Length: 408
Image (cartoon, rainbow, N blue to C red; front, side, top):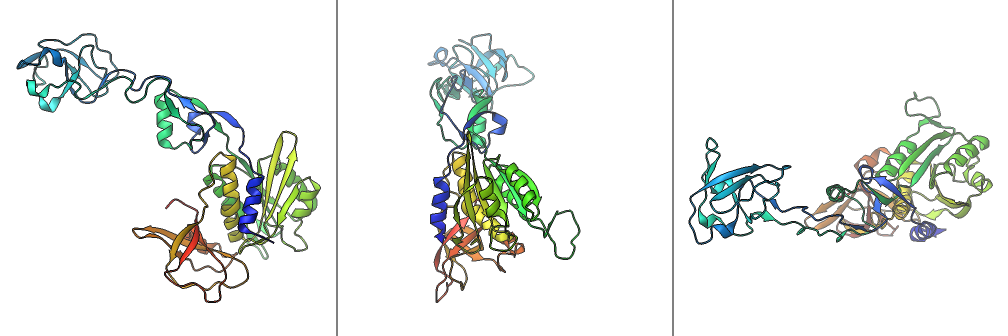
């Protein structure tokens, strides 16, 4: 039976970066650039004012003591100057507006004497006039042809803004992984149905769909497949058209755990089955290769916390690699345990926990968890503590490895 690191290594060995697509900028948040980008023009694209005030040519007043200057023009953002200020004149200008030719200084309006009822004149003291004051010259922020974003950049809101500034309306990014989600089992009913004897609502599908979306994948929910070979085969075949197929349930050793045998029938090659992990022991992983298309298949345990933990531990790093990201969200960190805890059994336990970033570092507090079927308790969890069974247990103050599911 594989340990967690061995299983994850095998999964990532079979995982590769997906092809790129030309994608609208509005759909690129969270995706990764597939090629390096250059700046298509200077930034700013013209000399501009950084303040509301008056533009002057400092060379015409150095050594003098101008008092009242004639205001020859008003330039607002989006308009173009038509006149050149010189000796005895000034141009009224707004923040972001193009600087008139010859002007090299903007005196803020709060530093002048100006009466809105007499807009044709402004009083400016010579000690307020300094070359390049409140002026941003063309190209000083970025020159045309310089590096804009390297390949492999995970696009965040500031990147989207930068690309918009430079008119990049579409770009090549590694496409989102398409992830089919199929829940299996005769006991499952839809979330909208009334409970009847022997049934439970299908919580795994909406949970896994939400986890796929959080991982920047495109979820393709396939609904519920009953424990019937023909129905399972049909739904599995549908899911194999995606980059990843996540199955929930049907991978243990029960009479109706049919998934592994059907996966074999449809050409999915098993890589491993079962791992040393609690919850998550029945995890199944395989690959189906066909001309021009590959599908990675994860058979997740049916108990909801098992599915949740296995997704974060194995599927999320897989999706990161497919999308061109470094799978770092789930790298182990160390945190200080806030309470005593005893781990039973013979497998490492991934214990749902609350992780908190403090001034002294990361702390971890296990939630009151009742086992792999206790989904309710995970409402308080934002990660897991990764704990091996030990004779003496763990004590408050111990440093333990953790995995974080959410940003802290």
